[in-house]
Length: 179
Image 1 (cartoon, helix red, strand yellow):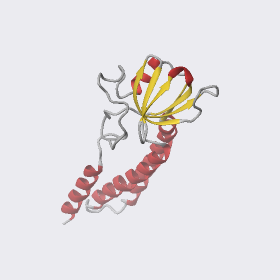
Image 2: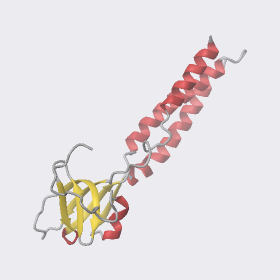
Image 3: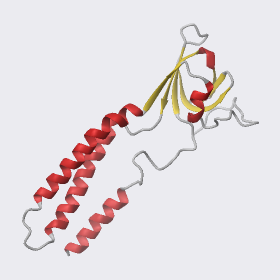
Image 4: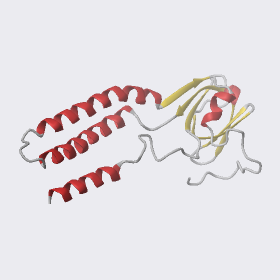
């Protein structure tokens, strides 16, 4: 009976693994941005949404309701959401990893005859996961958002859905629909 339980635990842990800590792969969409206009700009409201394209002198953003063009020379700062793995998400994954891995190894250890000290395996694995999570959380948390003050066209292109500019025939007047 124990080998079946061990197999089920191993399959369950393997099924929860997404293959990458930051998501299901590279998105075909642009990154989420928040554009802060300069104080002397015509429009002083912030623009948020998906970074569609960068063209000479213009940033195209897909907001909740429509596509917005922002003059590049009117931009004070652009915040780019690079990934969603924040420090708190790393902490949650560290706790989950400690419980799942420590539990599976302690269960496997208990299947060996004459071995009564399997609790130490759980504590050792849990401490290792806690250490790795504590070391990784600050760097992942601080790299999730990039601030670009007074950006140039080439600064934003890597984050756009269409880095070469809007495709010919793209309808910027159409209301934004679900992605």
